[in-house]
Each structure stands twice: as C-alpha cells, then as structure tokens.
Image 1 (cartoon, rainbow, N blue to C red):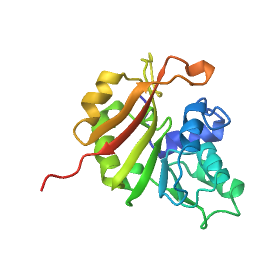
Image 2: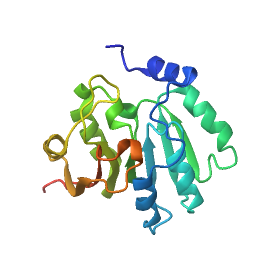
Image 3: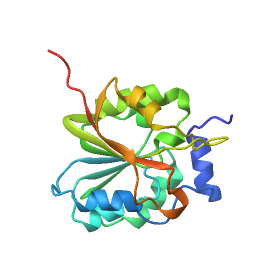
Image 4: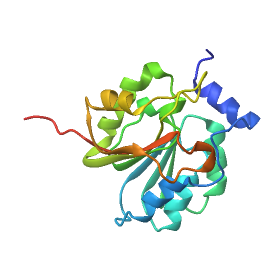
Length: 199
C-alpha cells in the first residue's frame, strides 16, 4: 500500500481526488453543531482539509476553531478562503496530527480516523486523549462498514468500543439516523469523553 504520508495526501488535493468531500457540512454534524451553546469552545478539526465543518461553525458564531491538516495544498486553499478570519476566530495548522500539541474542549471527527492506516488506530486514541482537556469531548462520525481497500478504512461499533475503551467513555455510539444518502446505514455518531486519571 502506498504510504499515506504528506506527499500522498497533498497529491490527492492537487489531482482533485477528494471523494470524501461532500461539498458541505454533513447533516449529522450540522445537527450536532446546532445544539452546542458555548461559542467560545476551543475546537480542533484534524484532517479538516476542505473546511466545511469550520465554515458552518463560524456561521454559528464560534470563535476559537483550529483546522489541522498535513497537506500544504489544503491549507493553502483554506488561507485564501478564510482570509479575513485567520488568526482571529480560525487558526490553520499545517502538520502531522501525531506531532500536534495543544488542549481542546472539542475535537471533531469527520473522515480523519478512516483515512489513517489501521495500524495507527491505537496511537490515534492515545493522541486524542492527550489533546482533549479534562472535560473535553471527541465527537463526530465513524464508518460502520467495511471497505475492500482503503482509504477509507472501515470498522464497526464493537471494534470502536474495544479500541476507545482504554482512554474514553462513550456518551453516544449509535447508528446515524440522518446521514447523507450515500452514507446512510454506514455511519455511527460518537460522543466520547476521556477517562480521568486515577489518583
């Protein structure tokens, strides 16, 4: 399998091979964002290349959003698109998720987990826990389906329960009722809080 590194992902943007891009914020995330009331939450969107989730959050008045992406081409496009908001309500970070440092109240999962080589899934869980504040939440969508070849790489609810249970408690792990048509029946919505260290 071709290495899923920066060069690989940058090439996908350069060639327009962005099949994960649905052109707007997905319906389940839109509904979730609509019921969030604290507009000053520190929010991270890893692998947020096209910026649709951030755009919708900004339209709702959220003031502290960070997009992290490994592809320079994606970040360059976002710099143009969000020119007036960068450094104010929106922060763009070019880099590797696993090297990123910070603390966030909310991390949004949308086609990032499924883009990683499955060998990195335990590291993903550990890094997510490290990036969340003590009362923070990891929320978003995971595929509840298997694919013949990836990315995207699939998974299922039981796998996620086993994987995340080392560092997280699930507040919600359920099939999506409002997925976009092409993903209907193949997504589950997650809301997870990190387990507190035992003292």
